Amino acid sequence: MSDMLARGVAFRLKAELPPEAKFLLEDFRLAVNNAIRAGLQARVTSRNALSKLAYKDFRQAHPRMYSQHLVSAFEVAGSVLKNCRRRLRKSGASRVPYVRRLMMKTENQAYKLDREQGVVDLPIRAGCHVKLELQVSDYHHRYLDDPSLTLGSLTLLPDRVIIAFRKDAPSHYVPESALSLDTNERSLDGVFLKSDEARAVKAEFPEIAMIQQRHHDRRKRLRKKKAHDRRTSRRLCRREGIREHHRIECRLHQVANAVLSFAENQKSAIVLEDLKGFKPIRNKELNRRLSLWPRRKLHRIIEYKAQWRGIPVVKVDPRYSSRTCPICGRIQDSRMGAEFECECGWHLDRHVNASLNLLQTAISKGMAGGLRFNPGAFQHDVMMTLYEPAMAARSEPNGTSCMGAVT
Ligand SMILES: [Zn+2]
View (cartoon, rainbow, N blue to C red):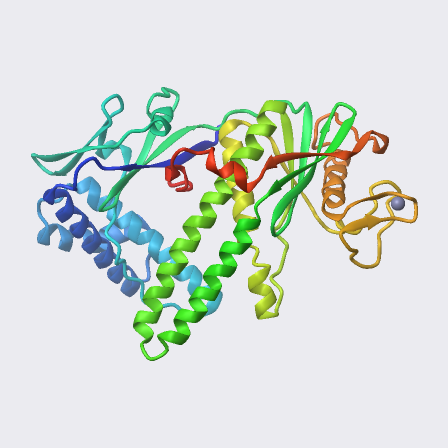
């Protein structure tokens, strides 16, 4: 396992950005947009090709910009162009990309970080550097003080800095137990299996569906109220969307952290359903309500955090998992109510039953170590809570970890 993992950590700045850095942000955006335009005309997307096209002209216009930054600008332009091309292939229509947001990215050779003091030294041009003092909390110290983490790229935004910390992917521990989770709209429902005992577990997040509903209603109302002014309507809706995104993201991280801490303590392998094959349903209303994104996102968060911490994650095909009897293997014709019942006498909460099937699949494929499931050992009357909304108040002292991975 020589995979390199990276995690973006956001730092607020102690003082406002110095004017030199603000100019740099504007120059960087200009360089990116110039390169995008040149790349579109010449139909190229690679950094080197863009650099050949745009370097000379931009150099003449901005003779003093630090050349490493210019190279990163071409790289950012290249990835914007690649995204644009992908969208074009997918939906057939794409606007000419233009970067509005002020941001700049730079590789680790081009900046210095004093990890003890929390100060970034960023070159602007020959003979001109700025020092950016970072606000450092306990959360940040976990990354700054860990000598096994090396530095990756740095992203500068008008109000914060995102630094990528990198490390080799740790090797997984050998699982001594398994935590199998079925992902539903309002909860993760599952089974925890250790030696020869199995019990139901639950991590509930009913707020996420509520947040989605609330923001959906708000946007609908906004669109009606501002029907005469499409620009304002679009702006306000976008703002609502960003807020919704932040709120949900934060909840998802809390749920994932709770699940992972439990798994790590118990040395569990985590079993999840593979959502890849799922196609969205056609009906628009149903589509929105059952939107898969928070679930996919939750899986992605669990997976990358698990990788970072060396927790094994297994993904299995979820087909028939909600309709199969884990004891006799009979497949029921239709979906059932809240309870799964089989002619052989087995009955269990529908969601927990689905996760039991996921676990069985993982075991039969040898993906959960040497574990075995014995139906007689299922503790029907015990339910363990891994997470519930009330726990939100005491976990995660700050929200800066809600950034996701940035490389
Ligand atoms: Zn049965």
